[in-house]
Image (cartoon, rainbow, N blue to C red; front, top):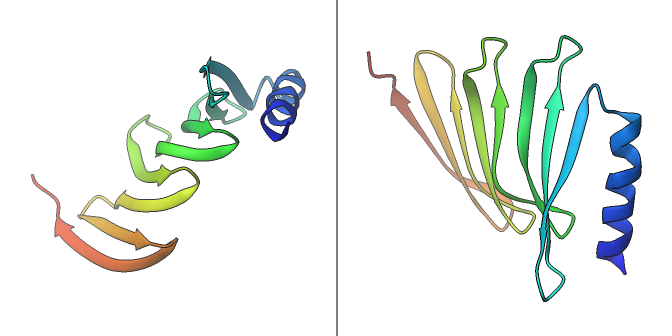
Length: 113
C-alpha cells in the first residue's frame, strides 16, 4: 500500500511541478519493487539534480550539476542509505564513505590536469 500511495503521489505532483521537477516511472517488477527516475530543473530549464527512487527511497547514484552541466557531486545510495559521496571543487575530489548512514572516512584527492 505504501508503494502504491507513493506512486500516486508522484503522478499527481508531477503535473504541479512540471517546470521544476520530473518523475518518471521506470519499472514495477513482479514483487512490486517500484523504480522512479527523478530530475530537478532550475527556472531556466537546466538540470540541477537527478537520481532514482526504489520503493520511495533514494537508490543508486544521485548527481548534482553546475550551471555548465558538469557534475559537481555524486551521492550513492543503497535502498535509502547513504553509501558514498564524491564531490569536486575544481582543485580536488572529496570522497566520503558512509556506514550506517554516518560519515566514517573522508579522503581528499588532488585534481588531475
